[in-house]
Amino acid sequence: MTAVLEGRELCLARGSKQLFSGLSFGLAGGHALVLRGANGVGKTSLLRVLAGLTEADAGEVWVGAKRTQALSSSARSAILYFGHANALKDEFTAAENLADQLALDANPASAEQQADALTVVGLMERRHVITRRLSQGQKRRIGLARLHLSRGALHKPVWLLDEPTNALDSDGSALFVHIVEAHLAEGGVAVIATHLPMALTGKVDELHMRGLV
Image (cartoon, rainbow, N blue to C red; front, side, top):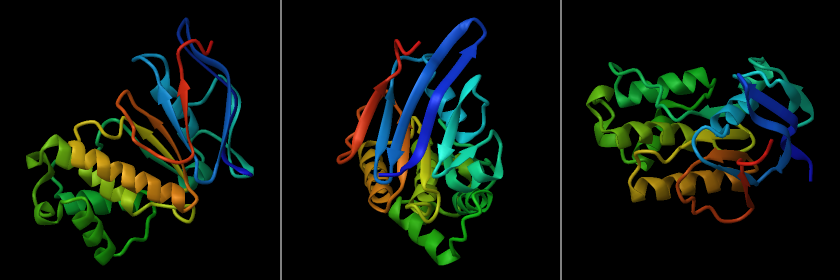
């Protein structure tokens, strides 16, 4: 099967520390890769390289049949990066933050679709609450609403998710798994960095990043 996302001989160092070297992988539609390893081994750095936010010291990132460059428009159009920080505006409401993130993603979801997504993630009754008054888990659910509206190969086919279940309770974590599995079922791919158990089923591989140098 043709790979949707490929890393080819990727290398990155931080000062005198080599985070990874000669790292290669490929993900076809419907597949996920879970990154494991202790803090500081390079999980977030690898996600940032794949997202085009950090330039690798060597190697290439390919999305579909096209090599992507750091900060390129092709990377932004195909890749959704979900960082470990919520990246929300405290004085916006939950609904306003969702709309803002979708605008940055160039996601054309309608107001009705956004309301549906907030209902799915359990925030409809809190949609007009200023975000700084929400719990950490509720803030994370705004990101889940963004994911819900970005599923499948026709929207953002490549998802790069950094500790996505942080601050979520068991119901929120189960909802996250459901959203990711729907994305994979619609032909998308996902690379997920996490230190928590991940109950994904189907075409899922794990990459343990210790000892990659």
